[in-house]
Length: 145
Image 1 (spheres, rainbow, N blue to C red):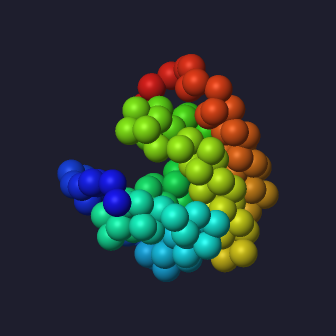
Image 2: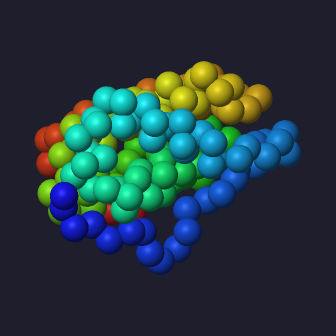
């Protein structure tokens, strides 16, 4: 098992407020997302242990919030944020194709939850943009966070 420290510093968002005022609890969505991720990559459970599970939920909450905020107001560029996260993870020798799959799973969780709010077409469009981050494998050129 790799030695990975649990998340520290700023806590990820707990919830998200849709444009209509509806609160979305990101916890259950993040846990569902991690369950799907570990279904695809069960070896990460052994490799990273409980700290890896904590990181999965941490990063999942951010992925969900970035996608929802991008869809709601466009004040966050989901694609840019995912590219930033990819650069960070690449620097930690994390297999970047797994982040690309995690982003695809994020899109699936948002689609199935209906959490896109009153403008789900924008959320889906932005997540499709995030899904294009398979370019992450190409080296992460571009802007920083």
